[in-house]
Image 1 (cartoon, rainbow, N blue to C red):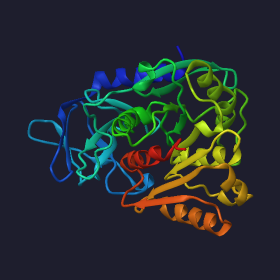
Image 2: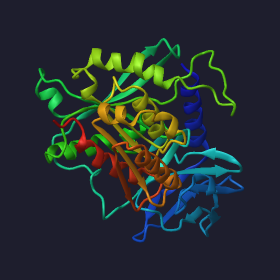
Image 3: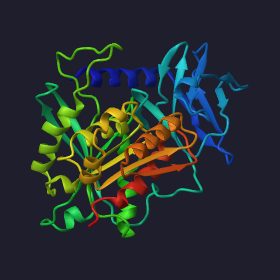
Length: 363
């Protein structure tokens, strides 16, 4: 049993022994959320839930208070529509709410809550043909460890065993993993809805963990280990997918995109491997080194069929996204830039995927 799995099991065991919700969190009509927790032995209880702040570094845990029944209670400020992580702190230790679903975010299993959005429904399930998200385990010779990929196959994949499909390689953000686009992002549901409406070509989506460290990985100047994800994607993930799935080979049938950290990875990999990808999408992931990534504007325009960038106007990377757009304009690089009211969170990225996917693999 590997170390991350052991840690996760211990994390859940500790939560089960010490802390439970009294009732599920209640979402109010104005977007506020009331949390009630049973933790009779706790001397102090806090909750970390993201509100109307655009930068995660600005967020601090909120103190919960005991009510007359002895339960710990906290009501948040109005939260933006969409998905929000939350985590509990009991006497300084972090815990998840063991009666609500767990998601991998904030670099650990943690909880999430949905705030209804009257303006966006692309990620909500409908009575349409549904695809599947499959778990693909494999041994990586690069990381010398077992890994798992999540692979979305459209409804047409099972119906027509002779048909081959194009592939979108879709990356998560910092502190998340290969499960995040399927769980938090609802990528499969978004594609199911788009395909059923005839707005999107049926495609396979590959969701790989964006962290890949060799056993002897060295650290950079900031103390972070050098990530070999690009090498893993090109040398292991893509060949594995093309061996196991009915895919259309060739760069014209491959796209790469990602959010936040994954958006930066998509920029670097897409702009550095024109013979591998023809479509590139960056969701709230503006790169600081875009000038170095784009050396020859004519080559970018010739090699890429689509270069798409999306970012919310309240996102803390919005100014950086504008700088990337300005740099691309100055260099004469063809691209599409989409801005909208929104912050650095899943509701923005669900929207981005719903707009980006219909632009892929068209004649």
